[in-house]
Image (cartoon, rainbow, N blue to C red; front, side):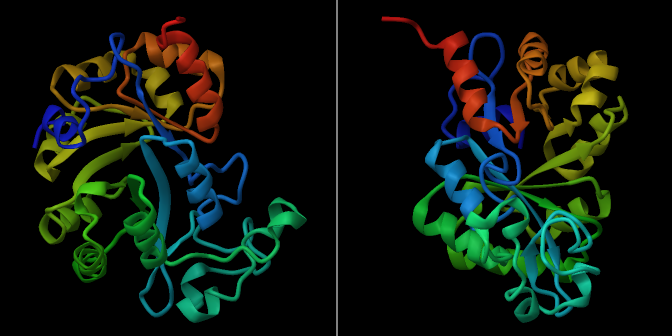
Length: 266
């Protein structure tokens, strides 16, 4: 599938760029106002009607996909140690909200199943980052959830790990794929094609270092979604480069910024 076909299937008639505003992707949900990767952050992003809600997933000790960014629990929960040391049931008792403020005490670590069923019933488009290397068997668990929830056309998977994306290509062919990169390279274009990826998503720093590569990626009919850009100066630079999407912790502010640039005054 080409990037233009991907846009068409998502009901986006034109390619984002100077003639159309870039897509807005809420990073780890609306992580500026609610604990990252929580159902509260997903719900807050949905309220803004963003184009995609990005979350991160890894696996528990018993192989259940759970929504957490870090390999350990230290930064965003009241527990310490590797995520992979706890079962999904044990993780369900972890407090993943009080670190952000007393109003979020008791927010839990959701399973991927809970997030996908939330998307199924309440709407939204999910951008799911698979952290680390996933085996075909682990990806098959996601495939089962996709079939159960009927959300294949409402989600995309992305990863830095090429073996993980290859497993997604083989075990999850009904879901589109993005290739994540810190710094984009010309050779990533052929790699993305081999993996069946429709976009290459660099960091903002990598984008700034390799603007010419980003142009080459777009010229080869691949999308570019840049992460994680949170300031107006960064957004202006990304608009000038005609990127296709902006991944941000501040989707509400970004929407206001884009409205000022693209919405006509009546």
